Amino acid sequence: MKKYLKKTIVILLILSVISVLYYYQIHAPIKIEGVKVTVMPLDDSDLDSMRHRYNEVYNGGFAAEYSTLLRLNGKFPEGDENDFRVISIDLKINNRSIFSQNDIRGYITTGSEDSRMLTCTDNLTTDFVRSFKNGEACPVFMHMYTGGLTDEEIVDYVLQQEIKLYYNNALGSKTEIISLKDIRPVETDIRKKE
Image (cartoon, rainbow, N blue to C red):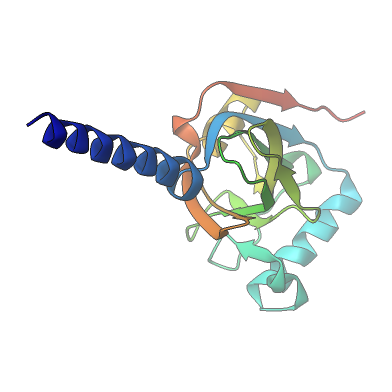
């Protein structure tokens, strides 16, 4: 009877260790522990560039290879440079794995016909977080029509979105859907025109 009990305890311990390793190394190697939303103003030349990029992505041009269309109706909103912003989304990441998480990229998944978000582009430089470390990654840059919104309303709108997050480690690639409204704490950086 004692031998059977010892075997059962050893098997349960082994299964527990395997379960913990699977969870932290394969299933959920990272935990998002905060988000920072940066809202940046435009000048007149930035607006022309934003309009050109939107039309190019909508029509399947070169920019469509590295940008995602979020306003699906093909109509760039009317307004001047004060009605548009560039938004960056930074994620504070706790890497709970023995492996570094590399090539962290993402895009907004919640576009619609009349979305205020126009296009998004993942970060052109890839971010990484070393094993058992905390780090920051900026997986998304987004162009947004903000006419009629306050700074607080812009941030609230952004926080209602989801990001499809991609990253790689020694075990392969991983994809997660991150709901920004579930992440706390939230930090904001509202930049003004100089």
